[in-house]
Image 1 (tube, helix red, strand yellow):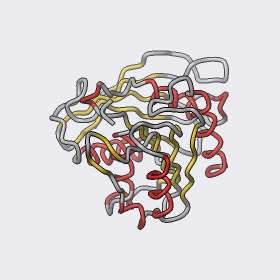
Image 2 (cartoon, one colour):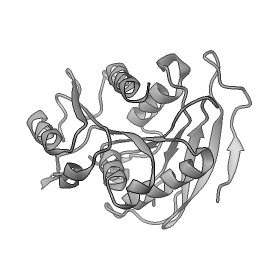
Image 3 (cartoon, helix red, strand yellow):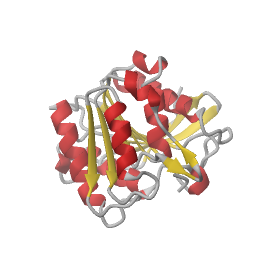
Image 4 (spheres, rainbow, N blue to C red):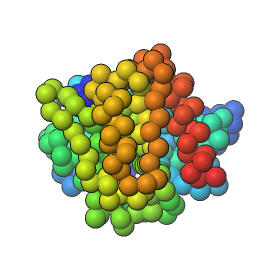
Length: 239
């Protein structure tokens, strides 16, 4: 598992199927101070905006993590069928984000990022995370505060069930009616398939559990199958 706004434009091109989307550097008003973030602009006709949360910062996780980056491409690049605006941010104490790592309160950082997206786009949201980021995304969206947002789909990539001798059960999912995708490698070292299946079975519907054959926790050599599974499920939910 351990593994207000100021913005500047990094590109001046209009997003098309043949050109990259605009990239904006964004500062979010987080509960522990300013949070560093990057927005990949999408099509003005997109029906939703998205958020991606990174893995554990004590294992080097940040908004540039390769799994987060490839998941972003599956949601933002027109070739995958969405071209949605998508925000990636650094949790408190990571990169240029203020504050210190807590391990639980990062769910409040997720809510702050969701608030920024709601104010910026006023569209339904897709919220996703990888590993620690998946756990924080689920916790935020399934909380009482999360019900204030129109979350149309919730994606947990590599959701950990055990790490460093600790077990993670996510009992709150039993009362979370948001459409959920649990997507992991079938050789995930932090989430044995049987344990993840138990979590999916105890979660409120609709919940889908998908495994990438031969994939480990970091989807090594399996990033494209991960993108395909993610995009396929989102099309079912959003189109």
